[in-house]
Image (tube, rainbow, N blue to C red; front, side, top):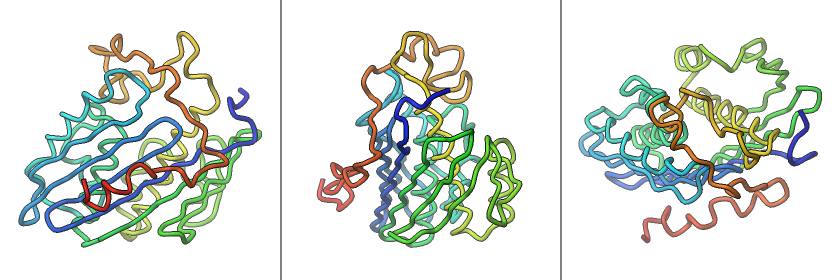
Length: 249
């Protein structure tokens, strides 16, 4: 299948900012622009919610309420810890991912952090995905279909089922976090291969997230025009979030 944006790349930026008692995460990519807040006291989450500035489906903003399930969990240096607190299929995938990063940043005492992912459009089902952390290259993978072909220690690993558990149990926390961030970017980059605004096209896996559960999938109407291409303008990602991340608003 040909890319909707040939010879381009999916770009994703994640900005994390923390102050005592509160962690904020902004994420923007071709398909999403969300802000997630986790508040905490004495090492325990006291509030978690999201604001959606751009989203693929009409009901996506309602998934923010599901993050309240994180209230009461202890902060953890592992972003995957939130998956033990809630059923990820009953959450917005991207909201719960970012909440995990917020929890981990608060637990580690991170003040500011930036992730930038680049996943070029596939050529013969291959791509070379890269992730920068605070401006320095943190991780890169050669990928064919759904398998990482290099470098070690990821070579031979499929990025599907079982990857999160392997990462959380086998890698040191910083590398594990980077791997989860890049894996999600690789997953969503596949959306560039289709025209999501075409009648009948879905924007998510049926049953895979809150919006696409059978009981509400009929309400997950496409927000036409919500996909943007940042191939040649990654610098504009999260620009609108600067004041929010600085806790000025």
